[in-house]
Length: 568
Image (tube, rainbow, N blue to C red):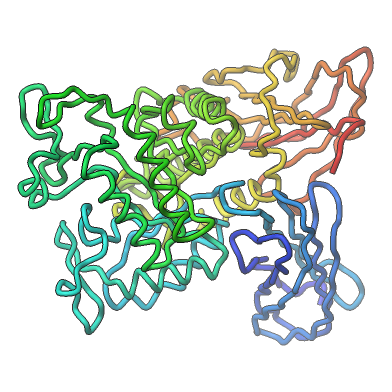
């Protein structure tokens, strides 16, 4: 059996996130071996660099037959906590046949460590809803936006006379056939996989027939013309005393109550920033969004305790007024002029500061994937890896992935691209990595460490990022110093939303850090490494200087200095 070409194809948890007290059902999938024989499968649950639980199963492998082995793991109650899963298959003589890894986390609720995904197909007769939601689960997406699921923007649920009783189908404002049965099935499938289902809802959009019937509610530009998005959706007055506001808030609450959504994704279009009411009063919409956000959250929580809302700060506007509201996280749709990797990091840091520490999600759509010819896919994929690394290293989360191994490349979600099968495991490994080490990447306790004195091969590390150099992002939490290294050495520019040169591995790299506190260990973490657990690096520390050597840097690596006062 030592020569049996068997592999561990997957180490899969059954939920995107677990609640305290939930057991974890882990399925390990083995590829077919060429010969039969006894074996043992070991599964280890790790927290950071420590073993938590170890379980083994004795197996009898059958030739040319795939196998799935299920483990039930008890999980510690602490939250928020990320964990690693290490699976090892041994033959009867104790020789390693195959290894595989995965990740999971335990959260009180999704907003502690949000990983946002999307669904956008709600046509009648959808039989692949479970498979599409499995695609979300594979990447640990624990909150899912149901994009354009509704009848109209001003009345979300279709009137009874607009619904076909045969398939619960209806026609939306753009002429698409949708189905309440499909929406309900998707909500149930998302929730069964440990994720929250959020309904898309525009805070001020209304179709022409509503605008025509209620001209007193439509906002006007300086020429007195009605403000609209391509004359498809007209902008309503969202002032607290406008009749529109309680109406749309009631719609949000109704879809949570009647369909079982876990909250609302509140959208806006980024314009107008100011407008006039039908009575001629000048209004500043940045002042009207916060009370509407707070009212919407109160309304959905009243009908479903634990529900939440996310508001779209389009182009980071108006982040100063919406970040401190009661929305559960800060969500920014990134547009020019925020075009560089440095901008992504700045957006996350500013949003955390303005919101007093809320998690931050960046909707950074990757246009290089839109109609990308096959010969350019490696450059588009490099852009995906670098953007994901930059956002996670800065402490944020990236809205990028969704159903059918889809990747967002346009603000109209149905235009998503499909990842090529060979690249799916690579991004999956990055999401495993972010979950497994969330306490060293996205934890609320992490703070920027700008005063860190760091050199790589004798050259001061760059912060902010510089084309053609390794980018170092230094952060700290009690007991730990965290150094993210992102390989930009092959990049001639820093545009995150552009084709990027696939990074060339570099190394070894000598790292020197000014650190006066005693360091116990230096750990190296690399997404996609086999095995997935941290590697302990040799180091020296004297005179307030720490020296170590990084064997190789491909795209992204994280060094963790475990200090003497570190706590688990």
